[in-house]
Length: 221
Image (cartoon, rainbow, N blue to C red):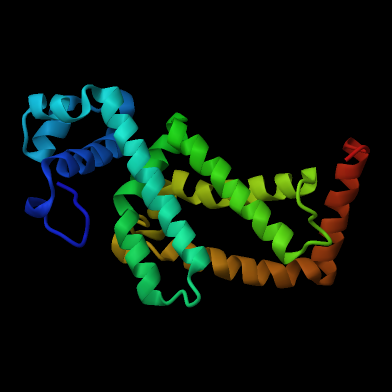
């Protein structure tokens, strides 16, 4: 039985225990493979109580979607607003969202509404970042900004979708709390070194070649 890290399962309300059990069940088996009975068994309640709180499997998924959206976007918003993003702050964010991230990984593959919403909102955050950081190069509203931001969102969420492959390659479950900062650390290091490489002579030639090809294929861009 999975639960939030700051309180044991017996301290959760029945509704919250059911939701957390559903998050784990949907993450492991997908929406089609998950059953109300498996969720009830994991939460230690009857199927009737699950139906009382959520009505149906669709209702249960809608509740999970809302929870995941609130947890992940709330954490992302706090990171953006935090003046000092300390290791302790980030650890709390990771701990609070492990179940949600596992659920999101499956949702991104299955194409659920929450996955689409989080991708879109992540892209919009990236658009604002580009426009605020480099306003001359990325004026708000331009197609160029939208394209770069969407690709950035796909790059980051792609590490979640491919977590099984990452875990196999690295020999650890990258979504476990003990390893949850691994992806972020690696991404930061990749950005730092690729930033240096792409502005050096060889990288600059590659960038120019890709830009020239893009302009040839899309002269109106």
